[in-house]
Image 1: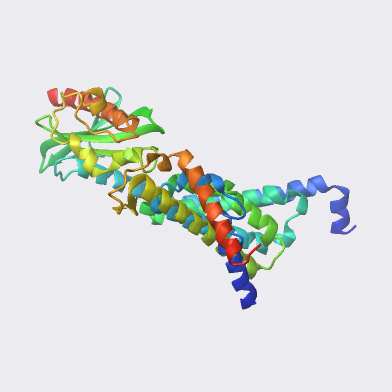
Image 2 (image 1 turned 180 degrees about the vertical axis):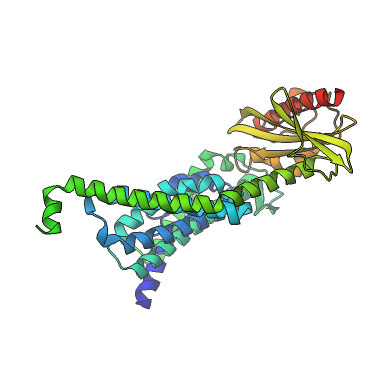
Length: 200
Length: 189
């Protein structure tokens, strides 16, 4: 059980990283990775929604008829995300203001649907929980990496603190084309390291 | 007839029923969550607005969000300290922003000088246009006369723009100018 959980955790974060290997959730990854703070916020909010969403899909997997599983997931996930959004707005208003526009985006995040469909539907509740957590953390890690590169190269800062002052700011990295460039280089770099350590 | 046979015979009805039940439960859960959080959220938003007023107006001890007059369709918030008038605030929205509408709150004292500008709502590019929310940037408006027309340096004004993002600061200047015109009318009255 523990061994399987650890393997699932490693797969979600590294071997099968949602952004760098599965190429899922690219839209939010490109849109909000302009700074580390935004990337971290979006990553953690997605992780929370993934964990709650996939765990409940796994709990109810036997009562969901196969043919209408997609609309059922969507209703469940959007309901859950709306509740999370309302609770955050009421009790963590500061954090909500920072993430406000990203939270509803999680409903249509394809990591959510894909992990529900390919994992939570076929596996037990606990291991589905671990898988959702691992994929959420993997997504967060990739986003924070992208955010760090874009913030340093594009704005000369990291988490808002100036660190590069000798190099001119390359604004394009903060704009959408820069997002595509960074994601390309990251995927290439990830592939290289992955091969080096013996992955397929 | 078993349940399974019934499903096979008329699956559409069964699916519709399942979807209906799932949607009903989701709707109930959401409305309960809404009921529980509605008042707290309204209070948070009011606190935030009061916080904005505190940032842009001279020190006051009344509740300007409840004490306001309407002028040209805008609500002008009146700040008083121990019963004496100390300043006015108004919130204006421009749709000239890069990412849509930008709402600002502008405060002035009774000498018709701007005492503060706060960006309440915007959807500008993170890392570029969203620098309009920085106090170091909005501080440039402080001390300016209400009669002054604010403009960015690219438009021969004296407000800094950001390299790569001129539209957002220009839009804020626009909104501040509209607010200043209204506040000027109030101070004349």
